[in-house]
Image 1 (cartoon, rainbow, N blue to C red):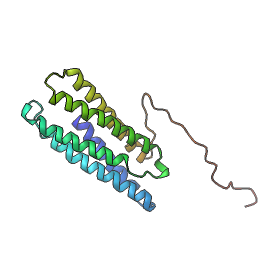
Image 2 (cartoon, rainbow, N blue to C red):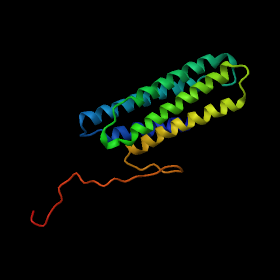
Image 3 (cartoon, rainbow, N blue to C red):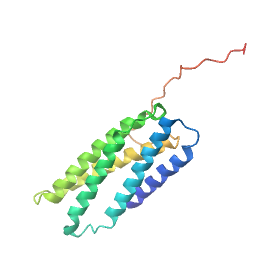
Image 4 (tube, rainbow, N blue to C red):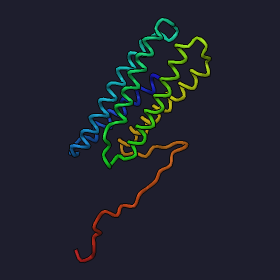
Length: 168
């Protein structure tokens, strides 16, 4: 999970640096917001990686980091998305929703002595789903089409242009 998160952060930052030239203010603001998200998530991931998952006394610190992570997903879901990346708005909203469920499940698991491991597994699955949406956003920002099960690509006809005629 750590390696996957690190690769995701690097790929989004790379996409941002490659696509930043000559864009509109709205697009630049979007890239900046996504870059800030990635930096914050990278910091949180580093903090989480420094915790000992086997040490029950650190569960409070883990939950605080997860709460911070959820907040970053909320912020990303509220960013205005340029038309060029319209699908990212839905992906960010879904990512936030999954992260909310994940964090809630992790809280239940770590704070409730009666919670079973299935609660943890559901939380982890939602956590993974949230980050999968972030991977899709990264892929789209790189100008590629996400691939995988349950991905439906809908191509739109572009009719907002003047066709070139033989007379021109």
